[in-house]
Length: 151
Image (cartoon, rainbow, N blue to C red; front, side, top):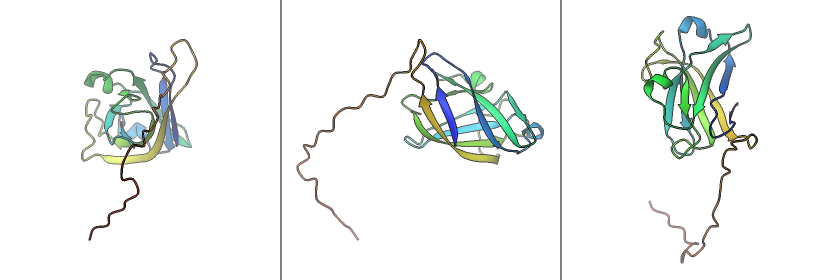
């Protein structure tokens, strides 16, 4: 599992995706897709920094606090951690982007790697990420124990 950490509201630290060796260098700049388990919303970004060792491949992305333009998505910035794509679990998919540095659409691309990511917030530093706030559940439903089965 990939641990994706939002350090603060104002940061954009590089986040690594390490995967088994998939020869990213010969496949061009990898396209990364992040799909929220909670909302089903997704976004893509092209890793402008990637590399390989004998054991694994790495692609890097940065998390922004506002929706980036296509230009910033093409250099590795993704908008994660807010309403449409909140903290929590993500499907992370890395595609062979056919040597393209501008294609942000994964349609028809070959999947190089698929994994699970968990986006969390670090609560240290001068610009701490706001903690999640919960409201008490109101149990005023009149009929809460009925089960209806239809055929």
